[in-house]
Amino acid sequence: MPGPVRELVEQQLRSVVLNSPFPCLGARSAFQNDSYLFNLLPDLDAPETPGYVIEDLRYFAQVRLRMANLYTYVVSFLEPRAIGDEPEWDRRLWSFLQRLHDLDDDPWDARFSTDPRDADFALSLAGLGQLVVTLYPGAHRYARRFAWTTLVFNPPEQDRANFPTDEQFLGFQNRIRERDARLQGQVNQSLPTTLDDPQAPGFSGAPVAPDSWRCPLRVHPPRKEP
Figure (spheres, helix red, strand yellow):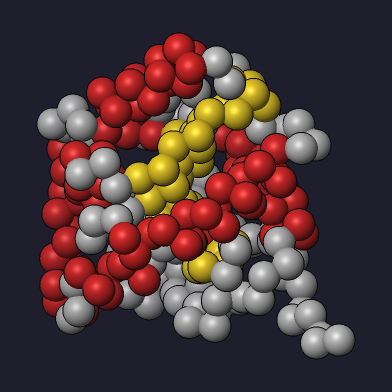
């Protein structure tokens, strides 16, 4: 993408994340310390897009441990400029994540479950488990509303590295939930409330009911060694 366009989108994203009311403390830390990788691609739905994202994620997996304590990979898209309703976005996101998984030839990160219904599920891409956060036009959550459709990939390995006990990790999560509630007036019901709740229902940011929502991801069985 042309440098000025990329800079425009990245600086807009930085202004959102680094604004004091933005609730996610992990994202704020990554952006404050420049411990993130950012890319801008033309179109989420273009056939070549998953290949670019997988290559970025492979590079991110190689360099992440040389970054600060909290690190992330972020990719924004010029298209689509508008999202339909939020259930449509939930389907669209998981369709894209399925395309990434279908293209990925690295083994699943064995530290994490392959079942999105499990609390210890993380989407393994380029051999590294990831939790996904999305920002997009029209999101009902203010902290998820952004002009450019954006996917944020956060390896949960960093959570235990920074918050080794359940009490510390829950304290960090609760601080984010409190900030989100102050911004929105209520907490995001699709996000987990305990360590036993799955993360996958919250990936799209759409208002889904975690108890009844069914993840459409089809995880491939492990590839046999030749």
